[in-house]
Length: 301
Image (cartoon, rainbow, N blue to C red; front, top):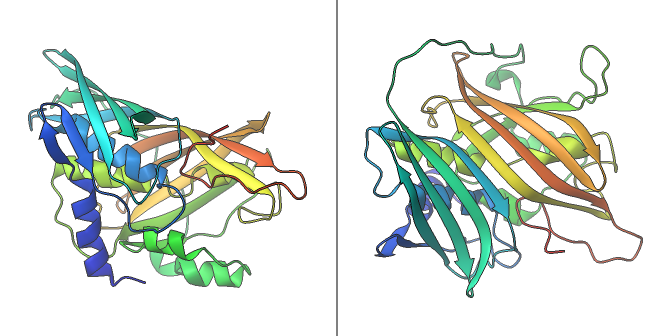
């Protein structure tokens, strides 16, 4: 696997889109090899494109995205930005991500000028700290699971430490929960805008897998087809991506071939920095059927 410092530099380069023309940008392809583009990459690059031309006094506070088609990881992605609104307090942008002349993702993002106001926030959950949690590879090995090499490369820029999953919450509601700690594997020294882009990338790591936990014998079970359908992030503060962040996830509903999951991201001090929601395709394929898309890509059917 790529050395963390190199992987972080490669991630930074990938998330900084190239300007081709006015409101037209190109995102670098991923290095994952054959398969499909990771959904978090497309969301993050689209957010980076949306933020171009927005003043530094305004930072992204929310994004809403729909995955439409699977992206080809060997080809760059073109991002067309539409300047829908520039107001006194908010700026709104729409982005269409394209490959081969066809949209693969639609995204809307809103940016808010710095403003003071009343405040409250949910506290951090009582969970073991990152020092008490094993590394990702060790945790998977202990569970008898092996992560595909392409997914390991996708995570090469991050240190990830999953906590013990809880299939039922303390009240016995049957709502699956899981959490993980993550941080960049080497300092990136990202500014406010890039820190949000990095978090947008990371927010697609494991969220919809929460909906699968009580079913199908695990996320990597044979015959399981899982793919992100839509994705939303609300940024409450600039995430300190060089330090540990806690991603706490739960899934209040699954049915009709879909699963819904939501998450909160807290910094090490317990401050709530982001909220996330996602719905995904969660389908058990008949025996002998071709296994479909994985998490982070559209279903294509």
